[in-house]
Amino acid sequence: MQSCSFSFRSGKWSGNSGPPPCNWRASRPHWFRPGRHSTAARRNADEVNELYRQGLATALELADATQQLFEAEVAEVTARYRMAQAYLAVREARGISPAGE
Image (cartoon, rainbow, N blue to C red):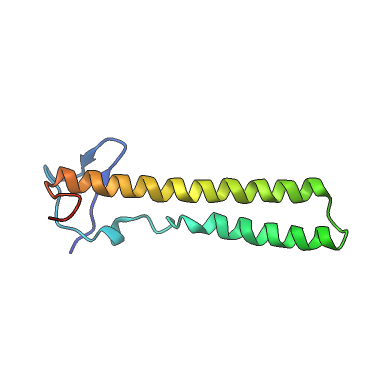
């Protein structure tokens, strides 16, 4: 199967008048990993929490790390939701039922 070339921003397929058969996983950009930032933020929050317990970090630094973790988790969930929406939109455009029936 070939990789897809669909722009969600413009809503158009490049090079074709319609959607080609394709491998959806191969179509995602190589850098797209929604959990990457939340993993780093979680590691940072854990480290700052440990430093706070040892008296080496301030409460403000702990609060900042916790806020960054929250924002990264919200961004991850939002990215996964938008990806699912886009996938369903493509299925609808191809005439396939969202339930796969």
